Image (cartoon, rainbow, N blue to C red):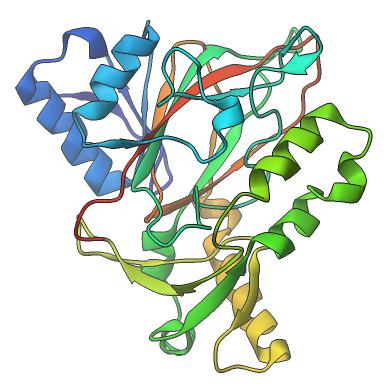
Length: 294
């Protein structure tokens, strides 16, 4: 079949309609896989997926990683990470404030996963519109459209990505966690991360597509190796400003049954936290492992 793709006016975020991921023939799967490789972020609408269905679909793309914070992995299906603000017996069932900064997932490991697939089970609503939108931007498009001088400055440089700086940036600190059950869990889990500081290139070659992509994360890079602190901060600010131009950012408004697939090498994303209980959010995420060549 020829996929029914509804294109946005952005480089990514295009929506696929009229497919059932529970009954996906090989030819249609290959078309979805090709769209994922080409665009980096795709949306598949109107799905009804059990955890087993989501895992079966995700595994067609490759092996899966378990999220490093086991506290929020589904007990019966630990390869599914729960993103939610729902409380059960006073305790969070998932990570409530996941991703509220511009990032690619699991930047704090040596080989970050290739991608993430997020499925909407419950979407918060204010009675007028859905809440909790997620924004996406293309780091591949950002690299390809960089001014030549800035591109030369970023090429062949590496940067230090700091978990400590991240914790301070998003407020996941021991001080703030003292009287917050949720943050206690998050801070305790983050302290188990082996690589508290890790080095990554500012420009990386996608191990599947061969395309060059910027590798930047908001509020995380403590320094660019070989530059002064002032020059380092200036370069990161310039790269982020170019990547996050409003005209290239796709804002996804969630519907129940959406599954959004993003590529962690060619895209950044940011979650919007404009909702509170009793507005409930429940998402199930699977994580696609880095390819062997990464």
